Image (cartoon, rainbow over all chains, first blue to last red; front, top):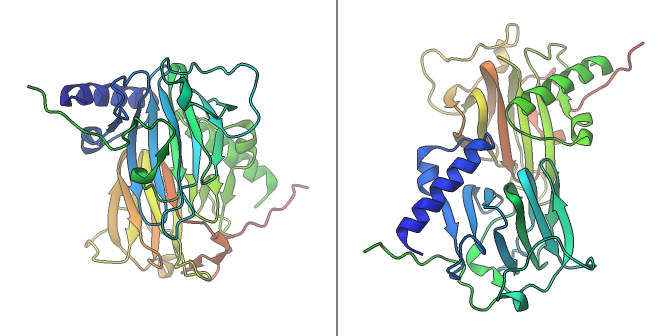
Length: 182
Length: 182
């Protein structure tokens, strides 16, 4: 992603958090993580993150999704002595559809990103509205998409080691490559 | 504490969270924890808590303090294989003065509760405004007091085992005794 595109997404994210009553420091705004997953379609498949704390014991983040933006399917594998990341998603504003392994409805409410259909394989649907939350056990494949208003989701979890996440889509690069603008 | 006093404090807490843009479910509102520490002066020494999740790996809560309300001095000791609770306080609204072990200013900004002076012994002062946070290592004595507007503080931590907390004030009972109204 280009540096200018990241800056734009950071500003949009800070504005959404501000509207949700979530206050960030100037330094936190500058460090908002914009994950495009190397797919070059941030508004369709992407995620914006603010990591408040990530110790060897616990982690807390805010996740921001633009309207209908999708975080692609992945799982958190065991890493060393760690059985894999366990995470609780709590919707703060907007709405999100979360999909995990398990029984699926006939038709899901999210729209699978066109051209990536093969890489979405779990469809047990959980709708999270503000104040609702769901805990994902380690090793469970999951993906999520915001509703038409976007979403702010607090993530409480064990230690994050994002670089070990396993994505279903082999084209995905979790860690960003940033191109400076010309 | 009387059941009616708890209900009143729960309603006040839910209102403060609502003003801060934090949405709770009806069930969460009914289960807001009102900790009076057995001291019979909730507005002076007390704390209101919403526990979102507490697994064997991590915990997340909202802490609410009424104006100038104080959470008395305590520490989180090792429990079994756990080296003791590590916790990150992030101020969401209002303001809070947090005191931990270490160098103290000549005069602190908080007001020590009258009659309990002997049980406040650490005075390294950290002021937290919205968007600011501080991580408390295990085994470190700490206490905190809200400013004149009260405070909402998100707590991200390792597993909570509140029943093992060690308070400086020997009169304190961490777990509540609820009296039904006549």
